[in-house]
Image (tube, rainbow, N blue to C red; front, side, top):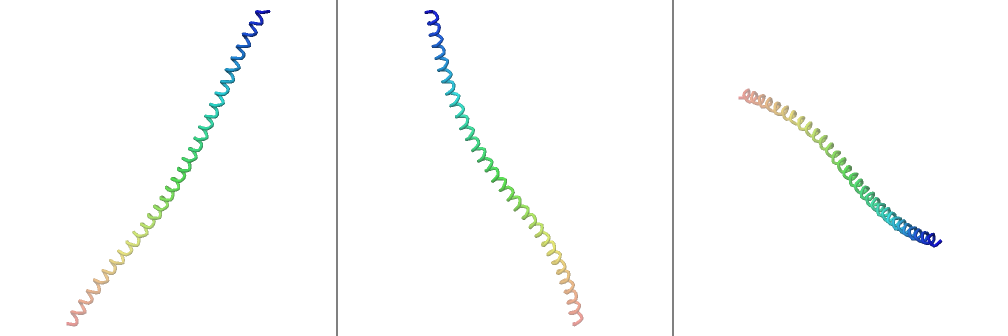
Length: 111
């Protein structure tokens, strides 16, 4: 009987140690889980901030592309206007040369 009591006491001691180990490990696991949840929250916040920044950059790029397209259109329009003005200038120069010729002929006739 004494041997059984000793064995029981020994097993109770082991059981208490195991329970203490389980409790310690449970606390460690809980702390680890809380730490990982906080890390996840921070990463989620950081990810959202980066997505917002990326979205802002995309809007900026889109806006600049839009302005560039308008500038290209304006440049093409100005080039067309310049071409038309050059043609009109050439026509006026031709007309002036023609009128000078007529004026010279008229002056010669008057003399």
